[in-house]
Length: 542
Image 1 (cartoon, rainbow, N blue to C red):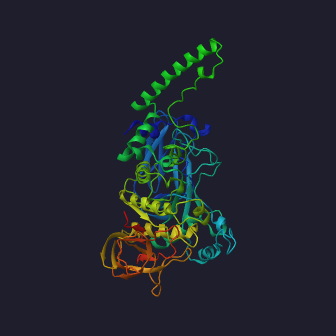
Image 2: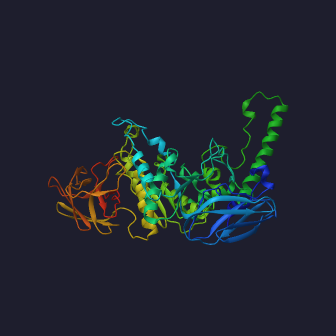
Image 3: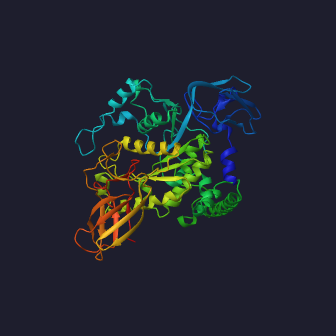
């Protein structure tokens, strides 16, 4: 294990903890009342106490003991537990007063990187028929919950600090959240502040899997800034960034070398500045800038800085899997797939969940003003194609989002597809995403396209706002185009033939290439598999 990782895990400055920590054991901030622990795996519980203090953690008829190290860091591992919706108490006992955490459940915990927006934001946010969007009526869902014999058990934890402290040069074990770093419980009597995607995801997941649902939300930022150092170390294509991050750690060999060089440069700067001042120089060229210590500029977006300031404080909380949305800002990055791979690998290592499956969403259709800001509209399709490369990462599924055309921001769309994937993962279903282009064969005017991830078969689907996909037997298959020797793309007739799609040239010209859903807002693209996942866009033109 590299020294950067050792520093992140064990170099625990006492100043990061409150003054009253000496009176009682202090758990890490993610351990609070009403939390959800991951079922069927060992569960790390950690925190701070006085150096060498013995700490006992008791929960679910088991007790685990640990001794705090010289910096006061302690950690125990609870044995794997079955799911339980019965609220229980966790007790943490040191030499002072015991700490009790009430209402603790055991179920499935999902780490989510994406928009953190409350249900109340959507309710009536937009006027019906306006250019800004549509009217979201959340109330029918809440009414259904109130009338149900058993409410969905959904709890969320938001790991995003308030203010400007989201990026940090060093791993943070605490951050200022003004008391908001705690688990929230879904309650239909006070639903407006509960997080939208977590609600719709948990609702479907609980209905099918029937275990408490925990949603740990870490927000989103630049891919590299979100990545733990371990992710760069584990990804061959990211070794250069791994080396950069190592130079920021003065306890590593690379870091010591970088710091020694900076100290040498400082000594030279001090000598030259003294000479210039002593000589009364009036030439600004005699006064150079102070050499900067290794590391990113404070507050800057740089590799690992968002992870340090936001995610590190909750690692390694055990999770079932990862659900990741990303920002548009990375769409021009030629190393996008490698950085996404490093992020996924790094989060698995940091969260002590090496086998955790990951769902990685493609970018949604752009809003009309976003289209207007881009001169070359093909950038949206190329970006989705690049994102598809993320599926090469182990146990990673790329989920399409190009069919969210009615309103790309509707949280029900994202939650429905994410929960569908998560349920398929937990139930070990073989189909966890949409049909993926496999090959094509040209025969005169006809192109036959074969797909993977077909499952029980292909369908023409009807995707309405926030609703699951429904078969649309009387609707023609759309979204396919063919190009001939002239390179001009033309809309083409297409039909499903078993596990294949037959595409026919509309004008008698012999086609050379075929593509599907290849526009920013592909309104005609309606190919799905029977599992309800949209076919992923593709283009056979080199």
